[in-house]
Length: 212
Image (cartoon, helix red, strand yellow):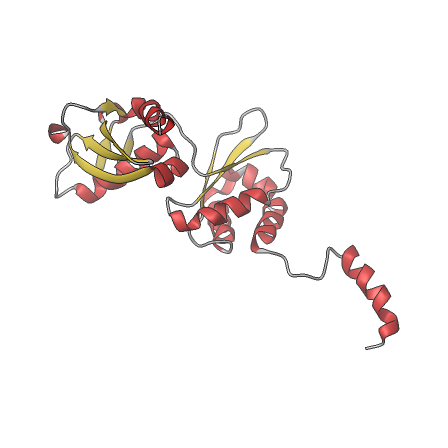
């Protein structure tokens, strides 16, 4: 290589955005910006758009998932989720930290707290207002006993899936994974006396953790 060319090559690399390979997070956001119009108006081709977005997220981390919110004031929420998998939390943090300015989007890391909603899944429907939760302080975490009408050993898998989704709604994905310890699912008939309704759970958990 002609060493006399080096002073010209180095500035050229800088002009082209640097010679180092892009990180997966940077590649994702470049893809997101290139496809921003179809993502913002995903209702026009929802299945294909969501499949492409999932594939792009999987290139960052195979456990990453997402949620879109409705349009409000010309903006949408874009929630980056670890799918409840603690090992994927650093990937969520890294992707969130590298997000560029996006005028039509509110980028949110982890599924946030929301008012619990009724959920139908696996052939069952659970109304949020019927779910009771016992809260057990345990060091810097809390244990939870989640009681749902209709829960039985035979239907436990479906009810547990619904229960985890409802806990994510009430407490948010981050708090469920970092501040909640053991979770037990039971029938309402076996809930015991010291329980609170699901909607009251955030206030109770926050008070217990604040006292530590």
